[in-house]
Length: 80
Image (cartoon, rainbow, N blue to C red; front, side, top):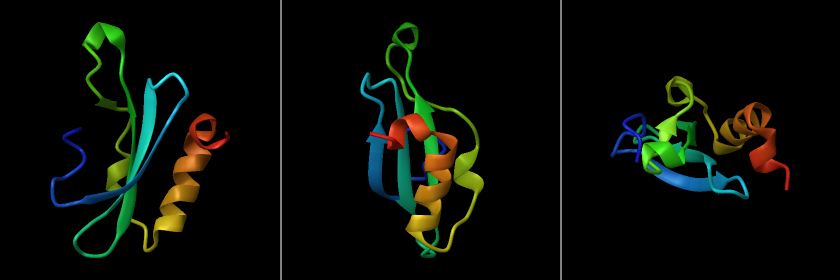
């Protein structure tokens, strides 16, 4: 788990590419706000998940808004 996903946040959904090298986690914070983080893992990094940006800093009032923004930024993960 990335350091950008706080242990107090509950991961609701996780989506990944077919090859398993990129993923998006949607989560809920204890204050009932939502967010997401995008990750990649590379074989040369021993498969450790690395955050692609600082998406987890963005706050959404509902999970659907977080999902839409995550899908906009990573359409290859959501367009299946």
